Amino acid sequence: MSSWSRALDELVTQRGAALFGYAYVLTGNAADAEDLVQSALVRTFRTGRASRGIDSTHAYVKRAIASAFIDGGRRAKTRPQRRHDDAGDFHAAERQAPTADPSES
Image (cartoon, rainbow, N blue to C red; front, side):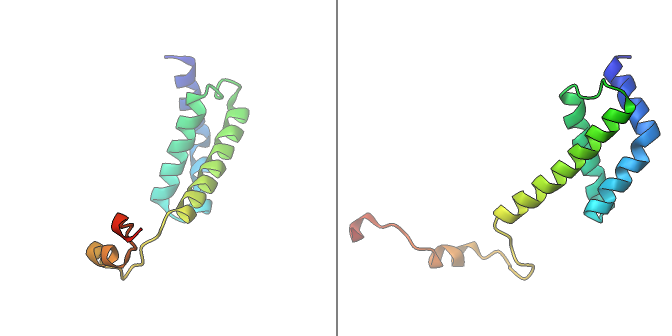
């Protein structure tokens, strides 16, 4: 078993519930919290930040959870959002959108 694998097993065994709880407080949703923890673990272990002991790895994963949560909020704000009552009439949107007709120049 490799050192990163042992570190991951130790972290998840000893601190997994705490990391999930932290992510759940941020998201308010169990599925989103699980995704956030998994994303943070991948980010942490991919960059090699996990080999410094369980306390520092735990702190780094918590910071990665917070960063991923903030980044997700920023992405959601910059993307256009559909209203819940929007049926998705793309043809109507095309009719309303201004077109660039070269003959009008």
